[in-house]
Length: 252
Length: 253
Image 1 (cartoon, helix red, strand yellow):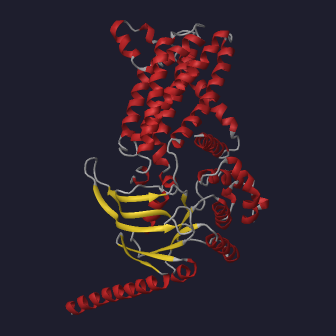
Image 2: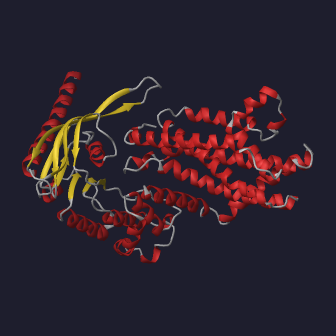
Image 3: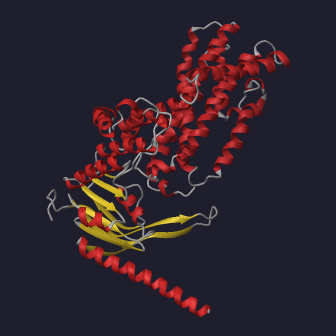
């Protein structure tokens, strides 16, 4: 168990290091990339289109950055095992290490981007407040959700590679359905309940209520998301163990 | 047979078979049996040679012994020993330094980080990479990478070492050194199963030989005797093919 975590961490570290040493500015890119990302949206929506009033840019960027973490985790987590078929054909390896390292890697990228976003917020005029402390449990819950999705998909994708196509389309759909460009609270009636079935819509809304409205979200649904995610991660780990000696035989 | 004695079995295969799938559609998968009926055992401390023609299933057999894949029929009885395939340069990443690759590779081979760090000086020394160990291995020559890879696997802990063909790497000098180191390790108390096409090597280092033909254990026993009948079989088979070709050539005329 300890060995598994140690290896997962080292793999994540090695991947990050490899990523960084590919470029001269290395680590700087992790901070610059989200800044460019934010500036691009700022220019398009804040200066060119002048949409949504003064609060729109922080509102939009919050959704984008949080979504990007989720989408990245799902994508890389689901590809984790088939990307390493060569490795697992040569040695016996706890398969959970592969999606696990990909998830940690994405987690790190998110922290870089999110800290840049917090810097942006303070520059934009939002004062850091004590309620930002609620971000800690919320980030933890999103990490659980990301992990649940990433790990479960990593179980299935090697057997049915077509699912990757499906994931791509569903992420595109999710991008528009998770309230990144609009506030799900402004939707009326039964439609709203439909949108709220999407856990990412709730999570994005949670970040906004903490950062932009200075108040804690309702934790009930998040507790449910966290518990469900833990169950799914457990199930994924059981399945990875069950199929442990099948993955090396996958032809891809 | 008593447990723990020099002659005790550490792993035994009984009528074992393995199939792979041939890629079809989603619901159209065809099995093909790579191993059909394999039965033999490996005893503690011995060096077992595995011979057979290309495509006989030798590499699959090693994967089976290493626990990388599971049998689809028959049984494998193991005493729970740690078996591992000799994998050179496992997990090597071009942008990481030699040292970091050694640590990562060692961890993949089952060592704790602290264990491999303790062994690093010996690994660096054996691979003759003192001045380069902090450089990224993308700057290494293939010989340097091979040396590092070999030094790591030489230090990896295992009870049953599975070797697929290669036991020496690098240029002539290092090759001699690595072959010597590997032979020393093989001759020690370590249990080894080695696949090789070199009858000379098998005769020199193996206590016993298993001959695999078409996924079936054809014969097993003393190296001299098995290799003798294997070579006779090969000769006959080659001759058979040649005669067939001659016949068809005559028929065409």
